[in-house]
Every structure is written in structure tokens, then in C-alpha cells.
Image (cartoon, rainbow, N blue to C red; front, side, top):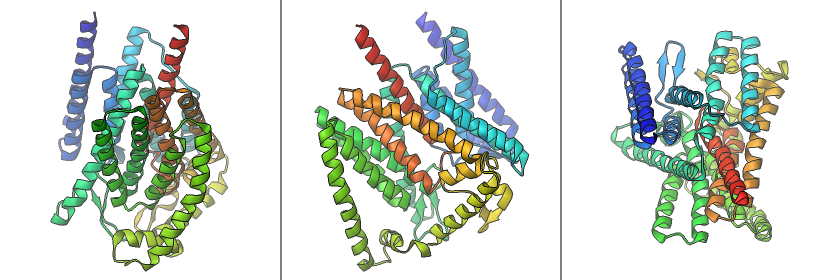
Length: 471
């Protein structure tokens, strides 16, 4: 029976892959679209045949979330691999759940995420100056909570969750390595993913992400998670070869963070690494001691670095970027963002309760500085697009996602399980709470896959605790 079920799953994956490829045949005039769909079809087929369901669904969602820059423009609609992957995986998952009459799991965080999407839909259909654009963006935003829901439901036990976290980290290291490689070959006239703009003193790699800030922020997020797991592995006495491999991966991620030239990513990693050092030991007394030490040492260290920075040669790119912290009022990027935030907050005051709808900032202001107007700050964007109501729903999602994660992590006696879950929680909190206040990436599915791994970890570890109690 098991072999028959596996064969049925493989045939189902093959049918989906062929469907994606056949859909691409209508786009023969768009070579990039055809190649992207063909690559995604191959990815779906390979994952389904080699890994089996449901882990293959998680793999597809993770990989699709990390190749956001390879989008397809079909008329006014932009389609990314993550959109197609979410629909394909949802189709297979819902079909199997229906055939097996298996109930789907939900959490308060899922309901808050769905409520946040409902506010986007309402404001987009009601108040967006470009109603068609608002509904189109609301449809894409629906795939974000859907991705979160899928990752949560596709991980049935602790073993599969551990495999998913490892794959998530491995994919992040490969993504960072590709960005580093792209930066290394750029001087030879080969651009595999490097951003050059008027406000950059140095070419910035973005790998397969949308832009350099997101590349740096997510690399910092993976670095924080890997640092927690590495320290937990050292405490648990894991083999040195495995520890050395983790330190090597951490080095790749930190180099990517440095090359990204993203000040938000730099700050995020420093704060996140400090949180890891404070909480990596379960002892409350040790945590208090380390917190007090960090509260004294970290500001002193930052003061010393900023005090020495003005005496270093500004021709060095990293020094120039550090020196910008001392005169942010003259920094063109920071000034432009402040101007955009002021416009967005002005819009919000006109519709404070429900906002203007997704994508409305561009519909209202058009092009700013010869580029489509967009809001780089997550908090300001939530207020402008969804008002106080959407802000409250998103805050509910954020709290109900992280609070159970912290609680369950503290209950774990196994150092590695605790390290994985707490590392996911800290890195996600830093990503959304700090980095996304400078470059908003909540509209891409990478952070929602991350959130799904947290919720799945809470579920499987709680379930395992209940089973142990019954035994």
C-alpha cells in the first residue's frame, strides 16, 4: 500500500510539472518566462520524485522563495516563482488532504495572518485609487499567508522539521555563496546579480534576491540562526567535523552580510548575535548576567568603533559606509527614505483606520526620483496600506507566532531542539522587527517560509512532549 501511495504521489508531481511546462508554451514570445517556468517545472518534478511528499513541498516552497528576482511580467501582472510554487503545492496538498479526509491544522497566528490579508483585500477594493491594482496586489498577498499555512501543515513530525530547518539553512548558505561569487566576477564584466546605483559607493551583490538590502538582511537572519545552532552543538558535544562545517557556513553568511553594504543588516546581526549569546544558555541566572554585560559592553564597543571611524580613509567602501552613521542627515538614501515615510504617513492620516490598500503608494505618488514610489519601512507601509486595523492584525500574527516559540523552546531539555527553535525565533524577530524597518520584504514569501518553520517547530515539539507524557 505504501509503495502504491508513493507511486501515486510521483505521478501527481509529474502531472503538475508537465502542466507548468505546458502553460509556458503559450509564452513562447517571452523567452525568460518560458525558461523560468521550465526551470520551476524541473524543480517540482525533481523534488517530488526524489524526496516524496510532504517534504518535497517544503523544499519547493523554500527554493522558490529564494529566487525572487527571476520574475515574469505578463502584461501588467508580475509573476514570481514563489507564486507558482505556492499554488502548485497548495493544489497537491489540498487534493491529498481531501482524498485522505485528513483535517488541516491551524494556529492563532494563521488566523491573524488571514485577517491581515482580509484588511488588505477590503482596503484594496474600497479605497485604493487604482482598484484593479489593489485587487491584483491583494491576490498576490493571499499567497503569503497561504505559504505560511502550507509550511506549517506539510511538516508532520520532529524529524521532518529538523530536515526542513537544515535545508533552509543550507539553501541560505548557497544563496549567500552565489551572491559572493556574483560580486567576485563582476569586475570582469559578468553580472550574475550585482546592483549598481547612484547612491551606492560600491557594487552590491543581491544574488537571486530582489535587491541588495534583502540579500544582506536574509543572510544576517541565516547567520543568527546558524550561530545559535553552532553554539548549541558545541554545548551538546557534537563531532568537530560538523562544528567546523557550521563555522565555515557562518563565515560565508557573514561575508555576504558585509558585502551587501546594508547598514540595517549589519545592525540586525550585531543585535541578533547579542541576543543569541544572552539566551543560548537555558539558565536564567546566566541570561541575566550576560544581558547586563551586553548592556554595558555593546554601547561601549559601538562608541569606540564610531569614534575611530572618522580617522580611517573614507576611500575604503566599508569605512565610507560606517562613516555614514555619523552624518545620516546628509546621506542620500536615508534622506530619501525619510521623505517617502513622511508622504506615506500623510496618506495614512486621511484613512487612519483601514488605509489606502496594497500598492496604493505608487497609485497616489507615481514615480519618485525616477523610480516607482514604494515604502521601505514595514511599520509605515502597514499603516499606509491597511491602517490601524491592519497594523493590529499583523502585530497579533507576530506575537502569536513568536510567544509560543519562546515558551516551547524554553521547555526543551535537548540543546539542539532548543537551539533550532530559539534560533528561528530570534532571527525572525530581528528580520521583521529591525531589518524590515529599513527595507520591507514582507511582500515576499521568504519570511513567511521562515514563520512556517517556527509554527511547525512549536507544533511538533509540543506533540512530542504530549506523547512522552502519555508513555
